[in-house]
Image 1 (cartoon, rainbow, N blue to C red):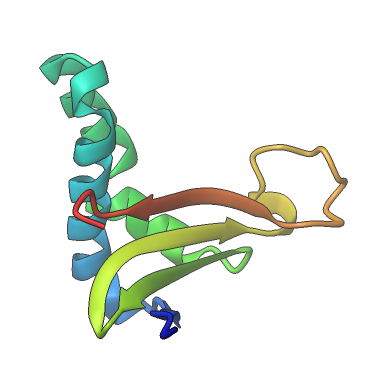
Image 2 (cartoon, one colour):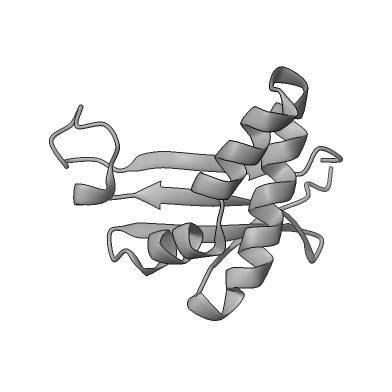
Length: 106
């Protein structure tokens, strides 16, 4: 039996536009049915702006990865380490999966 393999590729600063587009698309796919248009617009303008994503991407304690299936980008992952973690449960002895989004079609 053949198994499809998901490949992770580390995201770099030059990938910002692709990351931003994918972030907005996957967030909308995931949460638009649970929120008002106003709430979605507010969240996207504050948390998914180019400046915000760029700042997160520049943080040395965060790593972003695109996920690929059969050479097609299907989602992304954000990991936080040390001071970038939003929860201090393990006193920086672990890392946090902060975001993991996959396109709805997958």
